[in-house]
Image (cartoon, rainbow, N blue to C red; front, side, top):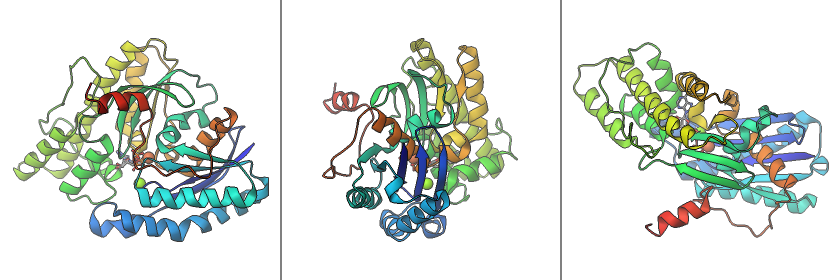
Length: 341
Ligand code: ATP
Ligand code: MG
Ligand code: FE
């Protein structure tokens, strides 16, 4: 079964062809760093226009590279949210048009489910349920992944996401955009104990996250003029590592049924974070699974794979389905929170 996956929820335009045997026949990602760099972050309107320019040529590229035509594809999977709504609409509408023209089913994929199931694309042995730390530009959550479309959210951030903290810290240290990789690079030359920074929520009994105070503390330390940029970057990264490790320990203790501990999302590309989390999993006797770096940041293969898993479960969508700027993986948890309970 061959799936074409489309991703356009943020600033990566991506397409991939993946089959149900976990083969990635072709995948392409076009970033938009040059367009957004002058603004120090993603400008939604510019992102949407760039997706319009790039998506169709990228789809043609992956079809050519794999040597297949649309007629050979069994379903079209497209990100339908959450994300920047203009970009999501470009990918979803393109997916609908292709599905309609080729007479193939449409699978509307939650971008977070794309990240959440991505480790199963490269690791056939990863079985449900597993504990997932989803760390990305817009999210920082601990989820028990019980199956396709079956998630229990144990924790989330009460303010900024982890990737957002990396991006804001990069900006205030003058390291530019995109921030995560820049902070990691500069941190390699700094002292992780060089600057005293807080570890928000560490030691609390619920495994939630908070990064806004940490970012403010970095801003104050930077303004004092007493520290080098590498020391600030390294100390910030270490504080994030300590928070993620502590919060993960609480969640692992609460989920003995988890078959493995898995990390996914763009921040999972960070080497210091990957190696620290390896240690936590080992202490709980769980296998540690992290997707390869190219599969951590946004890409089309994870959307195609989530599409394959949903198609196998009989989950396809009507062409009338709407794009969603917000779309929690665990809808019930969100409803409860929204009701102020
Ligand atoms: P979401 O998935 O929550 O909708 P997104 O799609 O924008 O958000 P991803 O593409 O999954 O997020 O991840 C991008 C984030 O990952 C950015 O915040 C980026 O700074 C961060 N990131 C990427 N590489 C690294 C790295 N090496 N170290 C730390 N952070 C990184
Ligand atoms: Mg991006
Ligand atoms: Fe993402």
